[in-house]
Length: 400
Image (cartoon, rainbow, N blue to C red; front, side, top):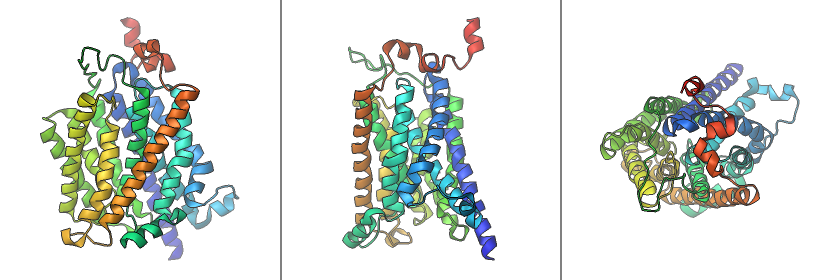
């Protein structure tokens, strides 16, 4: 029976890893559909190469920083318990690699290729694993300190803060330091729309992310005996809540509609194992509303050119999710309890602060050392031709 459980656990978390791996295709197509046509190839290449760099760095350094487990041992030892530790690495790698995938959407269309890969290596090797280890592996005694202060540990079941808020708040300094795309905000005060290039691809990316998210959330149990249908249904309810809120507030705009479910899913990650489904629906509605309102403010009022709106979507909706777990996870609102609003606020602020400071340090240092942005000519030509020497439809370009 023990051997059967070990095999089942390894298969369970492996399937979760595969589902979250598929989400990276969602990131790629969401970005491809949102950016202009001259930057579509770059969107696809960035996500794949970022994932590859993340894999190597997380295997060699990051996983050890977070969990104290080194893979520099014999294969016989690695294969113990059906290789569970290896597939656990695979599963958690897909979370870690989501950080540069999130950032990619914010800095799209004007960021240089190799400097961003250097940032990816630093973030996935050190910045992200340090906070991951604090929340999910009792690192530095921080969780014990929070529990002593508030009565409960900071609860983040599937990464509203650890993954999404950290990714979104890391992206904000990068977006600010890069500056807006050329002609996005004109001197006369006019705003150039730069509309999405391909709504079907944008929708495809959103759907792939949505489906994969059920692996992201449900498989965060990490062993099959801890699987919970509550997590699955709460994820579903938050997804539809975000969609409907974005539909109404976004006035039928397809970009808002297809980011709405993602906003809900980002927010429900932290407390998806604790909330009542109606609470999860409410969390999703608020998250979808946050995305539409704050995306509009960011782009039009504050003139921060966050191309895919990753700060509102991941940074703000993630932070809302961390706090919402302390509200809707409480027994008074139908939740399972065992969570403290004070702990949730404190843990959320820690994640936001760590990411924001780290983002300015990492991207500020890279900008000073080698620059972050394409030249004006390269940006005008598009990242596809400037970096990859080919467009998304080269046969048409030759004919034209």
